[in-house]
Structures are given as C-alpha cells and as structure tokens.
Picture 1 (tube, helix red, strand yellow):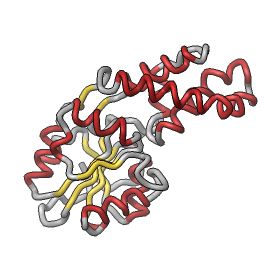
Picture 2 (picture 1 turned 45 degrees about the vertical axis):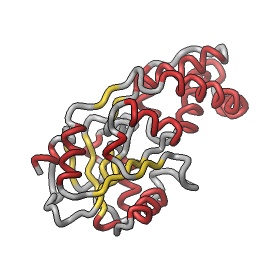
Picture 3 (picture 1 turned 180 degrees about the vertical axis):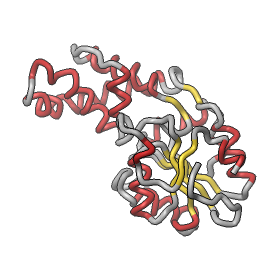
Picture 4 (picture 1 turned 45 degrees about the horizontal axis):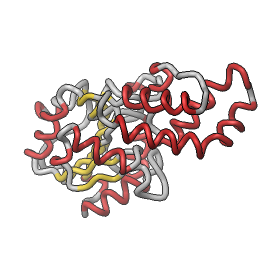
Length: 233
C-alpha cells in the first residue's frame, strides 16, 4: 500500500467493487458467455480474452465477446452483426448467468478480513458494481458477503455506469456521506476514474481485472495485494 492514510477518523464509509475485487468471477463469465455463443452457433471465447473485457457492464462484455469471435471471419462487419445479434445474445446470457451465478467463482483470499476491518473501523459499507443488480445480490448472498453491506447497487441502478462518477455520487448520497470521506475500493481504471471524478479517495487491489493493463499504472491513492492489508492499516 502507498500514500493513503487509513486513520480511522479519515473515512465514514467505503464503497467496494465486486468482480475482480471481492470475487473472482471469471469462471462464471466464461461459462455463461460460451453457453450463449453456443446457442448462437458461434465459437467459444477463451478466458484470457474474457478477462480483458470485464469491468464495463454486461452489455459491453456481451458485445465484446460477439465481436471477438466473429472478427476473424467477418472483419469490419463483425461490429454491425454483433449489434444485430445483441438482443438475442443478451436474453441467452441472462438465462445462463442466472443459472451458473456463483458456481464457477470464488471469494479472493483476505476479502473477509478486509471487510471485517473496515466495519471494525466504524465504516458503513456499500457494494457498487457494473454487474446487473439481479446478478450481484444473489452472488453476494451465495458467497456469504451480503451481510457486510448496507446497500448494493448494480450497473442498472443509475443512468450511467463506472467510470462515470454518477454511481459513486449517488451511492454517497444514499449513504449520507461526503465523497471526500468515502473510500472507493476497486480493481481497475474504471473504479479509479470514477472515484477521481467523484472526489473519493481510491485504493485498488493488484489481482483483479484491469482490461489487461498493469493496475499499478493507474492513478490511485494506494494499492493492496489483499483486502486483508486494510486490517493491518
């Protein structure tokens, strides 16, 4: 960790991202996307490629996967065809994701200790993710994380998603806390950019999904290799 102070009096609340921050959900994404693609008679996409697509919401993930598997044969036309197939793809993806949600995912080591530490410091906690709320809440419950959070907001809760600051500002408003006293804990540039624009301090984990880019190159106030480091801080 660097630069940011975790003195208990500095923060009133923390907003915590879900995918890549608390839970490794790459297996759920891969299972759902590849079942969706099979329904559309399209080839599968490899997990390494999926990892680079995660973080901007399910709509972006689905469109990116469609373009990825069609581009080798359809070239520039892949984007247009992906848009044409999107509604069917979205329906099949929802069907499969709800069926597998949590079955191919695992809570990262240190997450429970980190959340307990934040609570022990008197911070109120909210989960804010670009994952649809109907996916996020069952996943938190499945992994035993739901009891830590007063509020859970998915990517469909507000008009815009991270990296737009609106979801963070609305979450701070719902918590009744000032952005400057509300810590954002995430795994990617989406979280950091949203936090910077909203006026929230931000710490990123080093193990998550950052679109295939080095996370330590992101403008953030600190980095942790495990949320358990928040306990030490």
